[in-house]
Amino acid sequence: MPLTFIALVFGYLLGSIPFGLVLTRLAGTGDLRSIGSGNIGATNVLRTGRKDLAIATLLLDALKGTAAVLIAGRFSVGEESGQLAIVAGLGAFLGHLYPVWLKFKGGKGVATYLGCLFGLYWPAGLVFVAAWLAVAALTRYSSAAALVASLAAPVALLLFGHRPEAELFVALAALLWLRHAENIRRLLAGTEGKIGQKGTAQS
Image 1 (cartoon, one colour):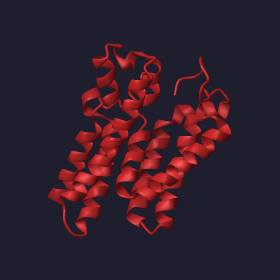
Image 2: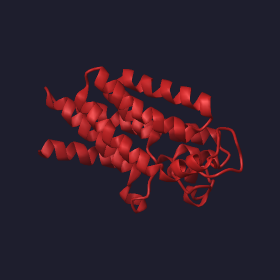
Image 3: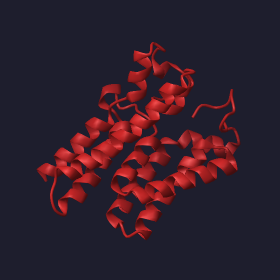
Image 4: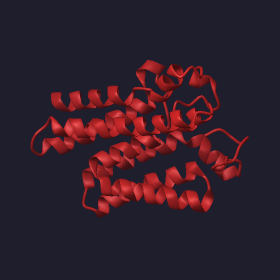
């Protein structure tokens, strides 16, 4: 139990690092929370006009999820290593969504979801990427691509025989969908902004 709690807290603290906010402040672009949607993720960082910062934010938000599960798994032994890695992944995702440093107002979790996925079982991460690319190419909706891909991942994990990880990502997908409630409403109303389209609703 103590190790499980430590893994959860470790993952949470790592996941709660708001890289988008840190990078934009260091670059002097102002408070990211006052720009566009006010979100701390890579999509909103892109609205500052800095593609380099957006890419860096995307990578770092993903890597903190990967690092959480790999480190937790590395410093545990036997069968518990997989369990602790899963718990750390949950912590990292929750940390990104609800960082204590920002009054629990964080990002939407797509990059961190993917980072945790690659850390726990990389073939399922490739399934996520493939699903995202397919839906994005067909619809040009980034949000729709993320939502569909988040459902494809746990299915892939289950088919690959990774039931505990699949159960984790069902829960993470539910949280991700919850954080995309506004996007879902705009998708249903036909007002969601498409990839490469300017002057549309915020994501």
